[in-house]
Image (spheres, one colour):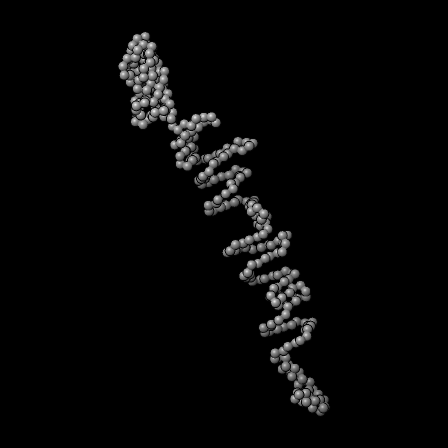
Length: 317
């Protein structure tokens, strides 16, 4: 009321008074706006609105219908591109895209200290793909695994594969399929559980187990060969057979072993007219084999001292 009366008095006292009244009015308006101000209607400005202090907007903020900040929740929605120059922290669960056809492109490096989950397929520059529906991983380049890899369902190699270190197979190893017989190549020695060895330099096969050859073959646990000398216990009746012994090292032969012997093909042995007609493991000792001789001399005779020297034997167990 005081300001109104003051202005009225100034206006009633001529041009100078009018000029002073205008200046005073501006100062009064300026002083009034400088304090807390409440505007109950809309504000429209054709220029820039500059606010140097903190601003509190209690309602929604709408930017020409393309971007909205909702007052009740703080949600921010935009129909345009969101560009963030500095680091961005998304603390809660974050969903990017709202349709399966939406693509997410990361031009730089992507790092996650926690689980990274994607509901669709994952493509790495067109060269590697993880299929969402099956979990299958396909890559056009080399697949490298520094640590131990477990392939529960197995793997199929469509091309030649090289293993630079040891290859351990705890289950069965198969190299055949329905249409062709493939080869398994090992440039070094091949070890099977430490009990069977194939030597690369010679091709020799050694096993501490049994060996079966062919579909209907019988398992062979051990084959032993060497030489021994026959020792007769006394004369053999003409045209009759008699067992003579051939001494071996202890433990060489066991009951039930198959035994094969061959006399040394010397003139002396053949001229004595004794023929080997059988052989077997000794029933009482593991240090000798029994060889059955047929006497074709025409009279009772004992094989000479030189007969049966270096007799070859073959024992199959």
